[in-house]
Image (tube, rainbow, N blue to C red; front, side, top):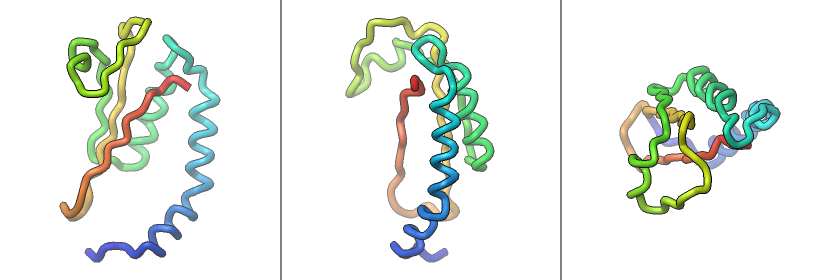
Length: 107
């Protein structure tokens, strides 16, 4: 499979722009303030599955799993009942670098 040109990438981004804006409008309309993020996590899990991502995983956020990681910053609230969802795209050809888009679901 040939690498897309910059022009092809820009065209694809332009064509998907309206859908991306609509998705973000739906996401930020959810009540997902601190300690009420569950609906937003479920929304993103559904969207990842609709996009056909190869692996979609939802898991609890546990302080003991993240406190040793570079960039960790303590917070003033509990991680109890906090979840994270990760979608993984597996390209048709394994070539080039990977991209990870970490997020905070509180909107």
